[in-house]
Image (cartoon, rainbow, N blue to C red; front, side, top):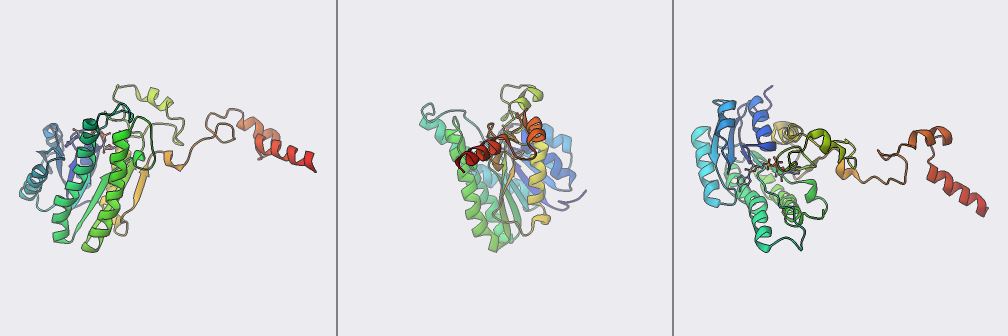
Length: 285
Ligand SMILES: NC(=O)c1ccc[n+]([C@@H]2O[C@H](COP(=O)([O-])OP(=O)(O)OC[C@H]3O[C@@H](n4cnc5c(N)ncnc54)[C@H](O)[C@@H]3O)[C@@H](O)[C@H]2O)c1
């Protein structure tokens, strides 16, 4: 496959997790990839081969972004694709979260994304060509307790994506956001539970399981490729259906609703609650 043939792609947080899955997939699709991370990405670059380099970067540092742009240019030429994927998480409620923790999360997740847009996006605008994917989260689409800083940062990434789409779109650069749900990586599984055990906690998601890094990488691939030439400022949830809504266990159709089948058989397609409502209405007539 060669959906990114001839493209140069920078992937932040590319040394592990979703970033690493994205680097592998993009390279397999013909891109030359720059793995940009604060941890060591040399082993992954060596695994991918001549079409990958590793560049150490703290995404919160403007100077590091400038060095990344230069290193990319020297190795492969100007960047065509940026995946703003690097992020950190602090599982803390508002009352538990120190202001320094809050600032640190915003610095990496939101300021880091801003700097990527400014430095790499700026270079793309100068060439009037490029595609940027900002990795937000379902936590950038709704609130979650214990996610004070993280959720704030991911809402910020989502908002910044819209601004960038408006400003860069007329200048040849598409910007979109991806919103993963739970994904089986170090961040999504910090205590190293077995996947089958984690899946049991995902009954609130239509897919009934946690997602895989490769499934998010596939969404980024589409948005980064020329196949998405008319997709700008969009937000793509890759969340097993989590953002589609919530299950009401009192109504039919919920995954844990063991009586659903039996009731459907007994009452046709109407639910137990519908029948009860009808019975009440009949009493009134
Ligand atoms: N795993 C999930 O459940 C989940 C869900 C929704 C969204 N996300 C988002 O997906 C993206 C990838 O997450 P992941 O699950 O692969 O996490 P991960 O922790 O496995 O990987 C994150 C990568 O970012 C790098 N990184 C952290 N701080 C950095 C910095 N200052 N500069 C450069 N690199 C830095 C880390 O070294 C690491 O390689 C993140 O944006 C995350 O917020 C993850």
